[in-house]
Amino acid sequence: YAAKLGNSGAIIYSPDIDKSSQQSLSLLSELRAALEQQAFRLYVQPKVGLDHGKVVAVEALVRWIHPERGFIFPDQFIPFAEQTGFIRQLTHWVMNEAARVCQVWKEQGIQLKISVNISTRDLLDQDLPGKFAQILQTNHVEAASFCLEITESAIMDDPVRAFQTLDRLHAMGLELSIDDFGTGYSSLAYLKRLPVHELKIDKSFVLKMEEDIDDTKIVKSTIDLGHNMGLRVVAEGVENLAVMNLLKEMGCDQAQGYYISKPMPSADLPAWLGKWQEQQTQAPS
Ligand code: C2E
Ligand code: MG
Ligand code: MG
Ligand code: MG
Image (cartoon, rainbow, N blue to C red; front, side):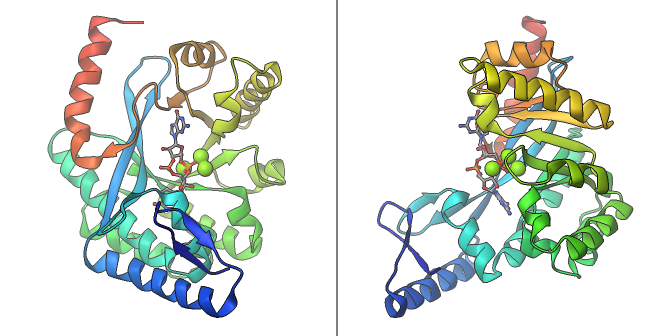
């Protein structure tokens, strides 16, 4: 695949090989330039504990502010970054920024776990655990403050090497989470083998929970499965109070979604947290 960013900011896959290889070269150089010019931004989205309503963690989600095309969502460049291997540099930037932000918040008395998304290509990088150890040390943050979100397909590509890397990250004290659970393959085999702490129910099930009884059943069964395996269960894609209450009734541990907050620039989090806490004390549930 070769790709370029269209005027709308959407990636266009071109069947024309000559043209498309040129286009992908230019996209790759744009990504590289973006790193140098500090055009990536770390956005964060809160995760709330359903039993008490407090924010317990955030997920780091990258955005690209393109000089001409403006705001670009990760779905429009992460797949390309994965294909070209650029993702390794991007993951390094995200992890470093997450660690920096974690340290800044700690100084402000804000103790939150931060989740970072990791791709296949990262898991195949034997140096990844060492690089992360270095980042944690430089920023004076503990491994236990971090959770790495991985998808089943990321593990599928080369399970032996992926398991090795994940075991090493786990041994360092980082938590692991299976993202988009239920959409990949062999979920159960991986659950058994991997040193995971958390399971995230894919938003495709959560978004339709209210209208589709099958989705409700899948969500409930996944919560029970996770708990039976001793895991924390998080629902993503919580867009209204009804779903939030339903998840709480079902015993789900944490919720993440637009109902609580859309992803925001990391610098906005402390003020947002203040407002959220105020709201919680005014209307205790
Ligand atoms: P993900 O890790 O499954 O992240 C959750 C996505 O769901 C985010 O999209 C988030 O904004 C969105 N979301 C959260 N709550 C709701 C909701 O209530 N309703 C709806 N409709 N959507 C919700 P986003 O930020 O566009 O990221 C998309 C995907 O891009 C992520 O899915 C992740 O796979 C990837 N990604 C984002 N940042 C990074 C990164 O730094 N590294 C890597 N490797 N992948 C990343
Ligand atoms: Mg994720
Ligand atoms: Mg997800
Ligand atoms: Mg996803």
